[in-house]
Length: 312
Image (cartoon, rainbow, N blue to C red; front, side):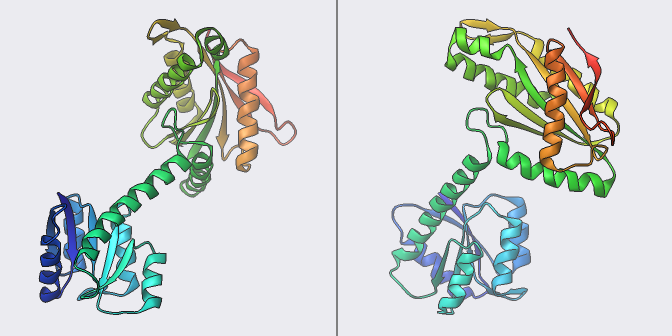
C-alpha cells in the first residue's frame, strides 16, 4: 500500500486523480485528500506519506513557492506536481526546485500517473542513499570527514553567536594496529564498529562523532559551559574505550589518545583547529596513551599542549 497526500483544491480534479490511481492493478494507493496547504502541513505533522501529489494553485499558496514550502516541511518525501498549465519553463523550474516530476492534468496514458509515483519514490530513495554514502562512513555509520567539516563550520558560527564554548576532540586508538595485525582485518573492522558504538554513548545527541579514517575519530562538543565539562567527557571516553572488547572468538584491550582544542579561545579556521587538536593528541601518545590533553593557545606559543588529566 502506497500512502499519498493529494493537495488539490479542485474536487473534480481530485476525483479524477483518485479514479486513475484506482485503475492501477499492480499496487494500491491509500490517498488522503486536502484542499489547502495549511491542511497538508497538519497531515504531514501527524503521519507518514510515501509521496505527495501537489497542485501549485491553492487558496493559500501559489506557484513555485508552494513547492518550496512543502519541501521545507517534508524534505524526504518525493513530490509530483500536478498542474493545469502545460508550461515547459514552469515544469523545468519545478524539477530544478526538487520536484520529482511535473505532470499536466488530463494528459497522457492513465498508467502515467501511477508509474510516475512509483518512479518518484524509487528516485528519492536512490537520492537519499547517495547522500548518505557521501556523508557517512559505511563501516561505522558515523559522520565522515566531509560532513564533519560542514558541521564544524556551522558549530563554530553558533559558538560565537551564542558565546558558548566548543570543544574539538581528535581521537586515535592505542594498540589498534596490533589487533589488526594479529587477529585480522575483519576483527579490526568489528572493533572499529564497537568503538563507534561506545563513543556515541559518551556524548549528547547534539554532539557530533565522526570517523576521519583508519582508527582516527573526531568529536564536536557544542554548548559547553567550561573546559572542565569537556574533561569529564574525555575521561568518560578513555574509561569506556579502556574496557575490554568482546570480538567473538577474540578479546582485545585497547586505549585511546585524545587531543582537545577549545573554540573560540583557539580562534582559528577548521584546518588549524584540527592541527592543534592533533598536536595535543600526539602529546597524549607520548605519555603512553589512554590520556587526553588540551591544546593551549597563546600569541607566542601557539602549539603548546597541557595535560589536564591522564589515566594509566
